[in-house]
Image (cartoon, rainbow, N blue to C red; front, top):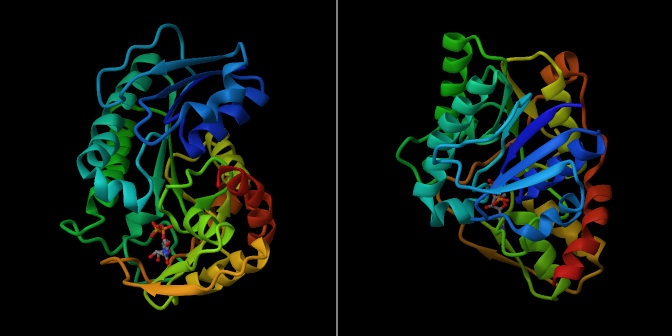
Length: 310
Ligand code: UDP
């Protein structure tokens, strides 16, 4: 059994990660300030006596009593709608929050786990994206608060690894979906689910030809835990390489929900990446992980949750 701190514990991925680590028998300390997360996500964890919760903003100095084996930094505003609304908080949690949690991991001699993003590749000029691709990011662009904070995060993780000889992991997470996403999250799957379930038109931005590759949450958590347990201290893409156009996704959601909704086209947000697909060769060969839930299956598993929320 290990003792693991998870930041962003009340969020979508953070809460699923806490549940999964608890199920494996670990002791988990969850930390969140609930800017985008919600206590509801921790209902199961709260009943577990191996779980404790700290209401804390990770951009401030962090004090945790006792030993820690791992610090997993998941706190972040991950939806473009949220990070456009709170660009300073987004920069702070990716930069200052990473610095503070690294300091804690160093103090505790713990493995440090950073959740980076496919956004480090920006609007990619190569598809799929291998970890060696250096990206196409506008440092002064509308998404730069997120992209650059995560790029800085990766850089400071590497610096702590090299200067302090720390044991580190870096997961580059690609689009993930499933139960516990907020209905007002603003990302494409919660939006489409909500619209299809209430009979409103699905809002496709642009002409819908832009692509994303969607990973079901259970696969993602499995990937993160596998990476933690591996010894790989360089970035690894974690995602599902099944690439779809946004229009195709809209049609699939309408079909699966059995909805009468149509589709309306809205303006494409500036600098919306045109394609995105992870090359997961490294995850397969070095971590021994690959996803196994297909998009149709994952969406079917998620409909019930969204229907309940609606
Ligand atoms: N999108 C859309 N309709 C929506 C929300 C998003 O067409 O109601 C598009 C968005 O422009 C992007 C893709 O869906 O091309 C994925 O957007 P999301 O916000 O989920 O995340 P991103 O991958 O852009 O970070």
